[in-house]
Image (cartoon, rainbow, N blue to C red; front, side, top):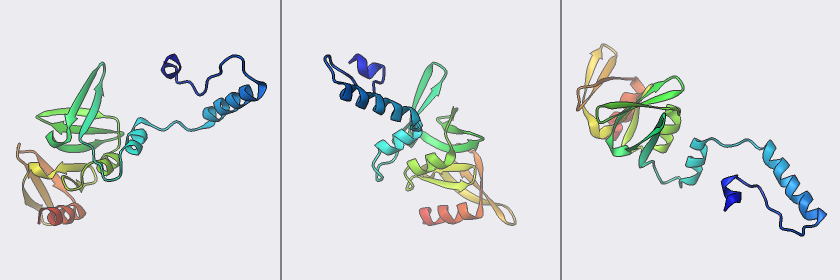
Amino acid sequence: MKAFEVHAVDYLLKPFSAERFDAALTRAKERLHQRTPSATELAAAARTPSQHLERLVIKDGARVHVIPAAQIDYLEAQDDYVAVHAAGKQHLKQQTLSSLEEALDPGQFIRIHRSYIVNVERVTRIEPYTKDSRVLILQNGTKLPVSQSGYTRISKLMG
């Protein structure tokens, strides 16, 4: 069990041969030269393609927030972070908006703008904003910009 705690690559039991030692050493050297996947990549690899995120885990200092996907109102890109807006609160998650878009259920979450993904269950209406733009209004009154392509996507989804 201690081997797992220290992330052992291999183990040797006495007595061991020179060949066995060389094999263990080679495996350890190979591991040093491999790129370590990020937590996001590992999580994506663990899910089958048909599975979607059911919850987001967000670390906030010593605290860990678990937010069910169904409670998310919308996601907003903020540089290398994503602001997760849920239940009247905002949490920052160090992840890209694109990677979250791939992980979330496309039947429930839709990208309406390069900086926004919205939970379609929270949409109240879409209104014209200027001659060529629209604004999406959520149940809580939040107004979000909608791009041309975003309007096409959400129109198809909502029928």
